Length: 381
Image 1 (spheres, rainbow, N blue to C red):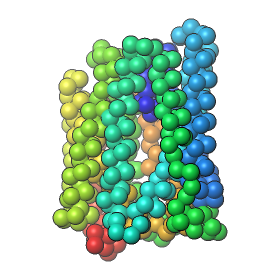
Image 2 (cartoon, helix red, strand yellow):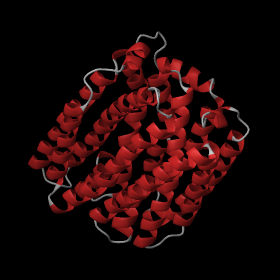
Image 3 (cartoon, rainbow, N blue to C red):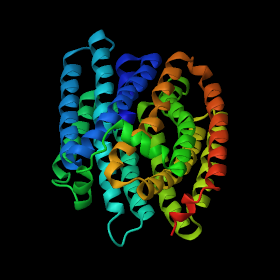
Image 4 (cartoon, one colour):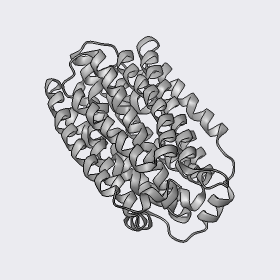
């Protein structure tokens, strides 16, 4: 709801495509700055305390924004300031909680009798179910009940997450928290020592340039250029999440049968082909179908990434290394917001075409290199 709903809230509050792009950038830039700190905090204090603190703080921030928007008129400086600050604050808090959750997922992957790619695909499935419901719910609430209802619902989910979250760490998390290597430097050193993971992260950074641009541009293209509603814009990503959820299940079975590299390469081909086709789309149905195909490919690539992370990163530096990998993977997203803010809406398809070509080249080089690395087939056993 936060990632897709808040840019829609900015568009509804300000009526400006430029501010919507800036809000997307503002939502992501603080996230990047928060990751090194989040990784160090989780490694030091454990997932339970950090997760609950982040969720409770996010609920308070969202409720405060709802109160402000109730007392001011839309399209004013006060309303614009409130939604822009909301984008920045929720971005930071969401990623802090995300690092905590992913660290718990890594610990679960190492429990006896479990295979990492199966655990990671289940965790990704949970994420995709939330992504399926979140955008369409945010769009419908914003369209029919107003900003306060959307923000109140988001705060409610944050409080529920804090209440249902774990109260204590697993034995593996407790042991890892006692390690001495924490922070950005330890995570960067660990990533550099793992060539397979480093190559995959590099390829996905290029791929995320295209995905980030689409996430930032779709609200503008659908609402401003095609004349559809905020609910229609949110529905695109909900349909995409449903397709991605199916792809996660297929990818898990493909890894069981054919191995990690073939499943990842097939996902890369699917994602790159869809992005190239999106650059020429000019109808709502075209965006809906092609973005669904793109996110199916991205779902498979995410299973591959999560599996490699679970197998290769040592537990004692997992959160710090995870923070570094996510930091790299998310750098394209604020840049995409700046592109949307600077490029006229009519020219955004050309920008998408450029990033689609870069994505195709980046993924092709990445999987050609991964095929020669011994660590990749080793994780399928």
